[in-house]
Image (cartoon, rainbow, N blue to C red; front, top):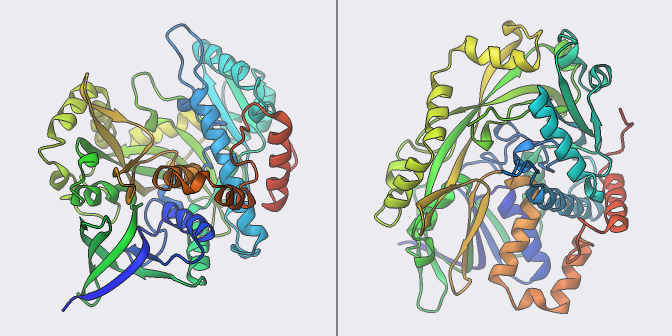
Length: 498
């Protein structure tokens, strides 16, 4: 006989999204009961894990794919402004967790690290200058530095410039306020905190088999305990599917009309990881370049300083690969089994319209170790192959969505899908994901609890966690600088400028 349980809220997936939403909802509804179900035997072990994402603290300081050039020659900075302000929201929430000891003061998850954009050639210089001039008009980017001076750039990124030809046309921007974030650590800290609260249970090693909406609007969730093979019959008033690449197959199990037309395209990632401590110590920045002409946004190369479990690392990538898995710990049947009548045409259409992405992935998969290493040497000319090893990173599933005009479109970013009764929400997509997790989860709350979040009570509770909630950090210089000063102090991100 199945074991029967019930909670007010069920969060599927023990990654940063569920952890963030869990804390927000428990603060807003202290008496609510919450169950978190995770297929793996560890919290934050998939997309949130430090080795499975860029850890950039995506703030749009250096990621050039967030500021695409327009046909008229200007630069579109709208996405960069949104992402940067969203990351400031995340920092406020994390500062609140630190202040209230929800995250122990001895637990480290964020470090200060300069963010640099670096490009080569006159055309790219013109682009970077236009980008810089557009961004520095806003207080959130006003500290950005721009340089065409070889010697100055050599001070910012000495490892990359030391043996480079001085005649080479190099241009760079620098943001000293950049960060490196271990999203696995912060996820585990948040889940550990949730487990100390009344009415919250975390179940690892449990896999969702089916989700069925009941006549009263609640959800019946069929779950298997992977260790005991016991079947559980769980009921919940509200369900959030935050399972990374695994969210799409779970959303399909709901049979919701709102889920029709969605598909997914999996892309795997790889890094070259430096194994030479002397080389690692010579680089102290996240340096992002520009994607090659015709390559997708996910291909933006970067030479990254990372801090993982207190140890400094150096990575270069990403190198894309293709796998039919939707999760790093998934099944090769994930993609084939996700294809159904409702999404087969959007997926075929998106494939036809994205031949360039297909070619890019084939080229990446077919690369020899020597070709892969030659790409690194464009950024670090003095690199030696013996100092680096290939590491497998996380799996991402890009959204494919039904489109009236084109049949189906491939979307980069994240999207919330919810039912009309606001009893279930699923998060699809990838980057910038974790860095903007707090803003995304506030969007989930606004979507699924529209009346309550308008109340004075909920607004004031949210403001205790995120003081600028409801206000813009993009245009309000005083608020932006005051907020940054506070979060920098609490999160201990002070550093000397380069």
